[in-house]
Amino acid sequence: MILISGLGNPGKEFLKTRHNIGFDIVDLIHSEFNFPKFSEKFNSLYSKKTIYERVIVIQKPMSYMNLSGDPIKKIFNFFKINTTDDIFVFHDDLDLEFSSLRIKSSGGHGGHNGIKNIIGLIGPKFNRIKFGIKNSFYKEKNIDANKFVLDKFSPEELEIIESIKKKIIINFELLIKKDFSSFKNCF
Figure 1: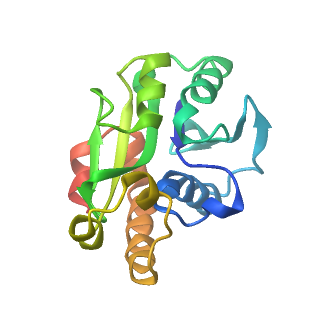
Figure 2: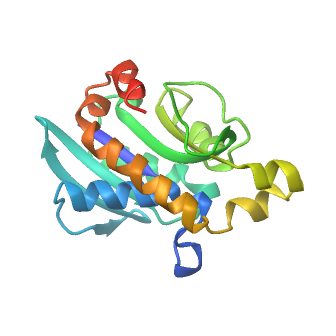
């Protein structure tokens, strides 16, 4: 069994913000693979389905970004997932250039408070799919990071994001089979 969690903040005011890219990706996986309606438990929205011969649980922690670890840990325990190696977390990364993807299977939090909270509760060994959100405007204007991540994407950025999200769906089987090098080569 695999747990795929997308990080974000609940509430309409956070829709289409940079910090909510994880929620957006999980929502697309939910619709594209016809997952059942989301259920609510452990301060999460989650759904479960078998795809490519793997049982997949998708999740959106509803605890706000910086407290994502507790809902992830509870869903992980509830479904008795074997190892934290079977956890995949989609999240924004302010250190990566806009629209770039990077996959890490362990390590530190890199200044991301949601990841820091998860590491504090389940340890550092889980898969992170980082979506770069840093753009030239952020670099040039020296904007406060907390404000920038809660701003909405521009229409031009949203167009690029839609293209990348489609590639994630097309290559989803590579991801869940942990063929990370082939998955990364698709972007």
